[in-house]
Image (cartoon, rainbow, N blue to C red):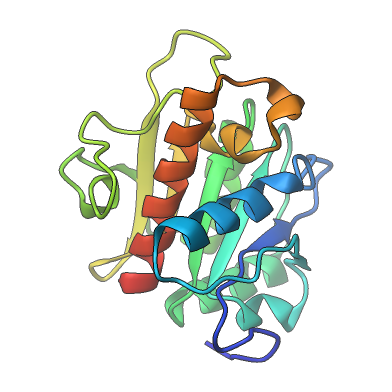
Amino acid sequence: MNAKGQNESAFQIARLKYNGGGDWYNDPSAEVNLLRFVSQNTNIKVKAEYKFVDISSEEIFSYPFLFMTGHGNVVFSKDDAIRLRKYLENGGFLYIDDDYSLDKAVRREMKKVFPEKDFVELPFSHGIYNILYDFSAGPPKTHKHDENVPQGFGIFIDKRLAVFYTYESNPSDGWADPEVHQDPQNKREEALRFGTNVVLWALSN
C-alpha cells in the first residue's frame, strides 16, 4: 500500500464515498469515536478525525482501512470495481457495515469487484471475533431494525480476509455520538469493542 497521505505513526480510517445515491456520509462521528476508543484500549497510535475518500480516486491507496456504510443504493463503475480490486489485492482492507437496506446493492456491486468470489459467512471461531474482545456468539445486535440474526461475512484473497461485512448488526451506529441514536451505554461499549476487534484483525493480518 502507498503510504502517501497516511501518517506512518498514526492509523486512520477512511470513509469510502461511493456513487448510486446511498448516504455514504451518515454518522461522521462514528470513526472518530472508534479511533479514540482504539487509542485508549490498545497501543495503536491513531489520527482520530473524519476522513473520506472517493472510490473513483487513487487516494484510496493511501489508507490501509476503508469503511463503507449507508442505506440504499450503491453503484460501482467498471473503473471503480477495478480500482477497488487492486486496492484489496495489494493488501487493503474494506469493512462494510449495512446500516439497513444496503445488502442487495452491496452484494451486487461486490460481484463486479470479484465476479469469481462470494461472501462467505464467518464461523464464530474466526479470529476477528476474539482477537481482543470476546464475540464468540458472533456480531452484536447494536441497532435493532428487526428480529433478524446479525451475521458477519467475508471475502478472502488467498487466506487473508480482505473484506468484512456485517449484516443486521450495525455496530457503527453504536460508534456515533450518544445523542445521534440514543443507544444505551452498554450497547455503545459493545459496538466499540467489536469495531476494535475489526481494526486489530485488519492491521495484524
